[in-house]
Image 1 (cartoon, one colour):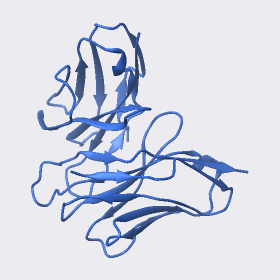
Image 2 (cartoon, chains in turn green, yellow):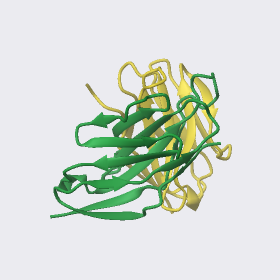
Image 3 (tube, chains in turn yellow, red):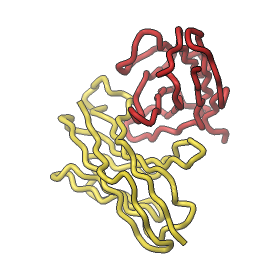
Image 4 (cartoon, one colour):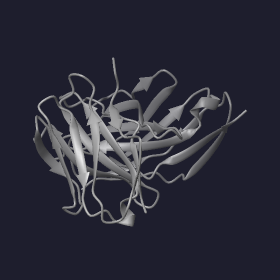
Amino acid sequence: AQKITQTQPGMFVQEKEAVTLDCTYDTSDQSYGLFWYKQPSSGEMIFLIYQGSYDEQNATEGRYSLNFQKARKSANLVISASQLGDSAMYFCAMRGDFNAGGTSYGKLTFGQGTILTVHP
Amino acid sequence: KAGVTQTPRYLIKTRGQQVTLSCSPISGHRSVSWYQQTPGQGLQFLFEYFSETQRNKGNFPGRFSGRQFSNSRSEMNVSTLELGDSALYLCASRKTGVNTEAFFGQGTRLTVV
């Protein structure tokens, strides 16, 4: 079984500052993928960044970077230079052991989310 | 390139009725997954379809079912609606492959009264 924990129900950040959203995970799978999604009030889930469990370097996508610490089972999202449009709910998610032919396939397990509010 | 399209966007149904939600994936995506999102339970996996076959199912009662057509479009059906089925239902599609991200539609917001 997989579990994602996001311990910050809400976070506040000043515009143009950086913010870190925490995510820890638990799995017995040897290989897995970690994802971050953004959900604005409109409801659509927007993919932000992906980290594979065997990737040696932390993933980066523009202003988003993923601080991946495998031994600690954490995959924190760092948003640099926050913008007002970054205000949204952020979800950390995991997909299980696809390489071993496991039954996870495309299933994503999500955390409870963190509401980020960016102040001007 | 068109994104994932879900119809309808909003739906109000009465307890006991049934409902069908539709999802058109991104062209070329053969995997379609469905999720239920509620304030209390968060995002929960319903099922995944690939090449018209259900290959994974979440922990939901049999009232929840789905199917996928040969053009990869998918429908999910909920029979005998209960008040607790009120939720945002999200559909996601992705290409095959281990590192592929899922792209989500805007969801169908179902209200059961």
